[in-house]
Amino acid sequence: MSRLFLFTACVALVAVASGAEDSKKTALDKATLEAYVRHLYVLDKRIQVTVSDAKVSALPGFVEETVHASLGNQSQDFTFYISKDGKKIVQGTVYDVAANPFKAELDKIKTMGAPGWGTSGAPVVLVEFSDFECPYCKEEAKAIRDNLLATYPTQVKLYFKEFPLESLHPWAKTAALAGRCVFGQSTDAFWAYHDWVFGQQDKITPDNVREQVLAWAKGQKDLDALKLGQCIDTKTTAAEVDAIEAQGRDLGINSTPTLFINGRRLAQAMDWASLKNIIDYEIEYQKTAKDAGDDCGCDLKLKLPGAPAQSAPGLPGIKR
Image 1 (cartoon, rainbow, N blue to C red):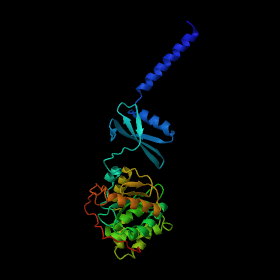
Image 2: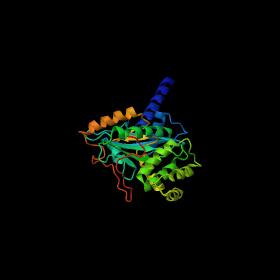
Image 3: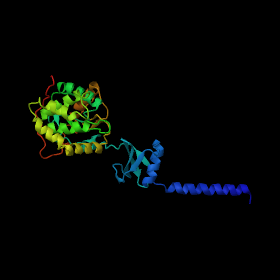
């Protein structure tokens, strides 16, 4: 028997064994899926990767798994649809043409108990997840406050949700807690606080945020400054802000501002002209679709006992 024959036979056996091993690989195995995704996106050993348990998918014949990658305070989620035999994976978004394309977001967004202004029953709802220390949030907030009601006096409703990015903004969480304390006393005072905090971003620090807020509160006729100070010191509103943050994470929010317009996610600061184009489109679309907005019957509200009543449409301090 020649050496060439023996060598060829050995190569063939290795190839067969390798092929058999590859055929046993399944993306339903977490370690296999992690290794595949690490290679796919060049996620080296510095990056922590965790794989969720498989769950029922909207895509027939597939299950859904989420791969969470993190490095320090940064993170990103990847959603994969895996064939039930584990051989194929698909990354993308599954849409049902019989439903609003943003139904998944609409089902998760809860607006009851959030500061809001505009017209109840409006065809377009904006829900903003924002950070009081974020400069981009400040820019978008000003654009919205200056233009939204002046342009759309009856067609829109906006809700504000605190989403402080503590790893980047050291006083944002305190400002969020204080804002909820203000809101507990007065809706109008909250919007005055909203405008004041964004306007004072360059003057507020982690060391003076409480002092600054209480000094501002003394000039507000609708606020009890002593009660506000006690609320801030005892972190009375921590559970409220934590619940909002949890909702944001469930929606996959990892940056601010993140604005939803009838469920459509805008994960970056937008100029007014761009926002207006989207709002105009939604107003026209909802005339026939009626599958979003404040009166669509969607699962947009979560009843919270004791939630402050919403004031009538109006913007304190805004020229019309």
